[in-house]
Structures are given as structure tokens and as C-alpha cells.
Image (cartoon, rainbow, N blue to C red; front, side, top):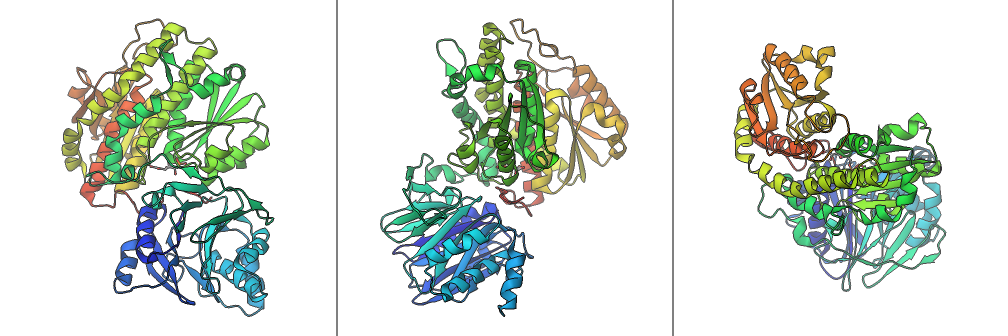
Length: 624
Ligand code: F6R
């Protein structure tokens, strides 16, 4: 949460900071601010709301300085007002911060006793005053940092400048991400590479507790103990082009359309041309260990957790491993009893979600092996996990997750099939067939996207509907949850997802003529080979979902079915029918997701919401 940017070089920092903040706006957009050192005075500008408001404030300002910091805020401590917006100042110090200083109140009380007064409700201002106190005792910015860090509790990153050290920008990462960019006679700090990737692709990912002292022409790294560290400079793979909208109205729409490519990229390198089966190289290396795994715990948040719920079906059906799925925010607090023979799978697009990271650390502390499915290389999750499977979806900028989700499902499918084969649950013949199905998936996703025009028309008729109900059975139940989440987060319409069979136990009371009911009822392609797994080879639940549909229809609900093209039953029973290409039981969750994303996108866009940056949300939730 919150985005940090810093610049130390030869250019006017205003444009660089504003541009960086716009690229980080997905991390929070309650207020924004920048500070630029002009001679020996720091000029601070802050505004409530979006970066646009800050930009308007700065229109007439020209700067001569070359050092500055900026911030876009997702409020935690203190209301989203200008007063609470960053940067915060204390004496010569100016500071921006992401995360939470948990023990700030204790420090605030002590500072107040020495007559320090505060102009905001934030933990950040307390930090600025701690710096001011140390500087007054004659310490430099770097030495003050070393003195202050042991006093702080929580997960945070910050960037700080001092009027008395005009050539120095200091950044600290401790449980929240901060990246150093290295250009020609200029250095950058940013919460995420996308803020600076178009300026340099040479970066250092700060590790837990590291301090970066950035001069314009070099960077020095230190541990919290003040020990000098060797910088590990990486050259990034993602290009700046991948970060742009490529002609689409919103990043979300672009990312929806990128899914066939993203899935193909995720699959690439994981299919063995000789055997014709899925072989994720990292899994192949530890296959003997994986043979003996007795249980899997999947932990994730939001959309990533929905992927985990589908993963449970895959892992239990293909690999016969008992699998639990937990919310990241609940896992560690329920004191999970983990078996040393078990495996924890963490799923995260960003790799920086605080609750997911805490689950990783909890598992490691109990001696359990950890495997992450992650999209961002060098993220905290990727660095700390025993094994990482990257989803290769490319950068996802829209706050609502789309291609990250379908690539997570793809990776879980591959993992489950490979584990199934390693553990002797599925035959080589079945593994080949499941691999062939998967290889067709990118093409099927593309074909499903051709239905966008029809879905947009449906969205027009549904845009004012007050209540949406999504239902599915078996491995499509998590997709009902995901469809509802997608719609509510970007359109602000009330939406709920349920297992269709659960309807009669309460939620059916909500159904009336006002409700739109989205029914997930695709047909499964029967496998040609004998994969003797119950419920896998046919459509045993097809008739059951049809009767669930009848139940809502009888109460006046307008039914929209996501089914399979050529189906003779559901189109007659539904107000609208979206016919997807036919695929297997296991791939239907991925394919059925596509029309739900498109529907949510068009309803939100017709309602005029800010699709890429919906209210109250942030892309990467780095606080508890
Ligand atoms: C919803 C959405 C969120 C994220 C969740 C976890 O569209 O994007 O629910 O899925 O915040 O984020 P990551 O995957 O970065 O851990």
C-alpha cells in the first residue's frame, strides 16, 4: 500500500516524481505529495485525492533542485486529508513512507513530552521527528537511520532527505518493497519497478532491513548494523512497452485480452517435447521429495485465494493429496497445526501481500516446505520461498486481477497434473491427454474473447441491476466467487458467489425480479483415455445445476448462463446464454472466468467507475 518514489540526479525532479507517482497510483490514491530540495530549503506540495490534483497544484512551479521524493497514499493512520498526506517534515527532514510503524504512539508520547508538536495523525510524522532528534545530536542522515531502525516495530519502507545533505537520498526497506534504480548520473527509489522501468532497467531490490544511500552517481548499501553490503544489481526482463495500455481504454481490458498470451507464456518451458507431458523443471528436480508429501495448505488473499480454491480440486483429483485453502489474514492466527511432511503453497500476483508473506513465515517457522506461485520476480515472496513457480503473466497494472488469476490457475493445473503423474495417480497416457488439453487453452481463451460484443450488449441491459448472484458447482464454485468479486470491486454493485447447491439453505431468499443470476454451467469434454477419477469424466453435476437454475427462475431472477456452445438445454432456460468453446472439466474454470471478467468490466465501465483504480482499493496490500 502507498507508493514511494525518489530521485537524485541532474534533471528537474518534478516531472520524474509525478510520472512515477502516476505509475504507482494503483498502490493507493487517497492523497499524493512531492518534496523537492531547492538550495537549502525543501519545498513540499500535497493534495487530497488523485495525482491529477497534485499536478494541477504544481502547474506553475519550476524547480532548480535535483533531489526529491514523492508519495501516493492509501490511508492507514489518519483520514485521507491533505494534512495527513506525505511527505511529512520535521526540521530539515522530509520523509515518505509505506507500511505501518506499529509502535509509533509510544514514540509520539515521548516526543510530545519533549515539546514536539505534530500536524498530522500519521505514524510517518513521528518517524520524521525521530530523525530530526537524531540530526540535532549531530548525526548524519545515514547514521540517524542506523540509530532509529532498531527503535521501530512493523513492516515499512521509507525514503528520506535532509536539507543539510543536499546530495543524499536514503531509502530503507523492512517488510515493504523498495527498489533502487541506477541510471547514468542519476539514481531512483521506487516501491515498484514500473515507476522507473522506462528510465533504467538496472535495479537493486532492497532486502529485509537494508539501507540504500543514493548519491547521483553511485549507491551504497548497508545492513541495519551499519555493515557495508555488496549490491546485487539486476537487469530487468519487463520492457516499458509492456507497462502501457496499448490502445485499450483501461489496463484491465488490455490485461483481459492479454490472457491467451499470458497463459501461453506460463505454459512455455513446462512441457517436455519428448514425453509430451507437463514437466515444470523446478518440480522435476525435487520430485522424490514431492512423492512423500502428505498434505498441502494453500494460503492466499482475494482473487489469488480463489485460484487456490480451484487448485484444491486439481490437487485432490489429480494427485490425491488432501488440500486445505486458507485466507492469508486468518492462517497464522488460527495457530495451524502443520505436519513436517506437508507443503505450504502461497499464491500471489505481487509477492508483497503482507498476510500471504506472514503465512509463508509461519510455515517456515514450523519447518514446513514452502512453494510460491508468484508473478513478480524478486518480490519478497519469491525471495523467501523454498521454491518459486513464476506465472509469467507480465505486469498487471489494473487493480482488479485478471491475467494473474488465469495464469495462477494454469500453473496450479500443471503442478497438479505433474504431481499426479509423479505419485502414480494418473497414467502417462492421461497426463499426455491433460497436457494436450492445456496446449489448446490459449486458443480457446482467444475464441472466448470474441464473445465480448455480445457480453457488452448484455452488460447494457444489466448495468442498473442492484444485485447479482453468481452460482456454480464443484470446481466452478470458486469461479462464482471470483465473478462476484470482480463485479463488486470495480462496479460497486452488490454481488455474491455461492455453491449452487447451497442456495436453498438461505441465499435464495434474496432472489426476486431485481436480481441477476449468473449460472456457471459449461459442459465437460469427456476424456478419450480412461482417467478413472470419479466425477472427472462426465457431467454428473450438469442436471443438478439445471434444477438450481429452475429454483431461481421460479422466484423471478433473470438468468444469465455461461455454458458451452451447442448446448441444447440451458439457452432455452436462460434470459441470456453465453456459449463458450467446449473444454475439459479441469480447464472449464479458466475458460468460464473470461466472460465474467468481460461482463464485470463492461458493467463497471457503463456505470462510469474508475475501472483501473476502484475506490478504497490498492493493487498490492502490504499492510495487515
Ligand atoms: C482482486 C484482487 C485482490 C488480490 C489480493 C491478493 O481483483 O486483485 O483480491 O488478488 O489482494 O493480491 P496478490 O495476488 O498480489 O497477493
